[in-house]
Length: 581
Image (cartoon, rainbow, N blue to C red; front, side, top):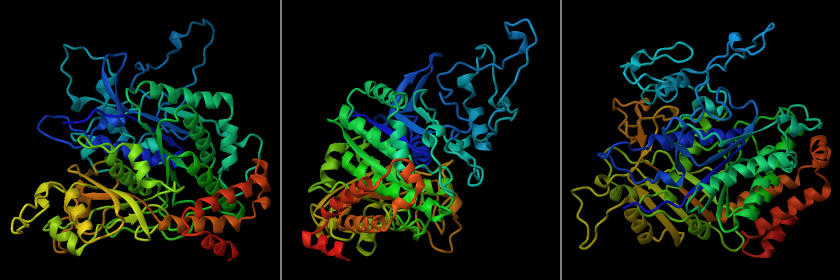
């Protein structure tokens, strides 16, 4: 029996965070169950809410506030189209003025094939129909005159890797009219000179300054309040935020507001650095690196737990190698492709508190991962999980390990592990134990989590503080999730022999695993961060000075990073030794 959902509100702050969030909401909608003959272990009410439009149509939309810069929405209206009445084209004849009228029409943003197909599918929500007319959907056209395809958009294959410009170019779910808040880029610049090669990459303090404007703060906090008031039993917030630009400063203001107004709730913050950053000058690079350091310093203190997400192996080296999964093909310079991997991590990891039968409260997750001042945790992802078409989990775990790869700047989760939470999804009960295997008397496995937990305990694999859960639902990678799978995989994401006829493009779903980990690897990450930050001469970067950064402010950032690192040292001598190097 499903337990009542204690809601979570999602905040997406920054353009790349919205790329990840868009993939995540698409993945969640792909896992919806619409008929009684199918079952699911996922309770979507944690992150979605019901509503009704003025046209009396029921809706199910994300509990979401998305913050971005004006101009980054593409064809998506800022208030959405779900609750808005049908927009009719204006005519000169409708003008109330009897004199000469010149009608100036702005050309609509061009939509890709996927969005046009979605528009046709959704036309029943926006078109007033005569109930006595029998409308054949094959004859429905969109505003561009394109006819609908015989296949729904979710079943067609698109190559969006080159056509996606902004995150709304592949957004499937509809958003509530209050789900979007756009910042004016002119407010970020505010008369300051941006260094050459930074491509409008404003720093941390520029974002913090913009958030302090009364109109901006009220616009954001009012939307958060409305989301909170729509919840019956709000347990907390999950925040996805860019940390390499001004959105880090905006997020600091948002987190401070949450700390002040919702202090009894729990916050999980995912600080995201995209892998495609390529500053053209040393000063532009310094702006990004200083902003990342400031974001880590501020957000870790304001969050219940702070999880850095970065596909590169170093948090400040923008050219460091990118994490490679054995059966994935990722182009790190393509936002649409790289963000899909981090979305798969979030969709899988979050199942630990979105389970229908035994959800773990966010407060408990925070307690497991944070103690002794350790408020930063690392993430890992096994995509796919690694099982073969002929494998059973009981035998497989004895000779293999899930391909859990770091999504947190290359953190090695095996280094001095202290605690962790893990999720295994998509391993069905029929794949737990082979029919030919005889288990000891009294031993019976009903889930992948139970089997894997038992194996880890018997093999005394650290850490001792561990929570594992499993769900039957696989990761459904239907359109518009990109075709990132390489090698030989079956359509349900299992490894097949090299002579098999299956190809990577046939993957529709896959088992996978994800985890959050506390351990010594975070200390290594912080050591990298502190060392690189200490080598930055921020007083030689005019943009940072114009935004308000001074020696005292930068010294405070470095001091806070030292304190964070100290929590991961076995004794103070280790820290003192590091300072002497």
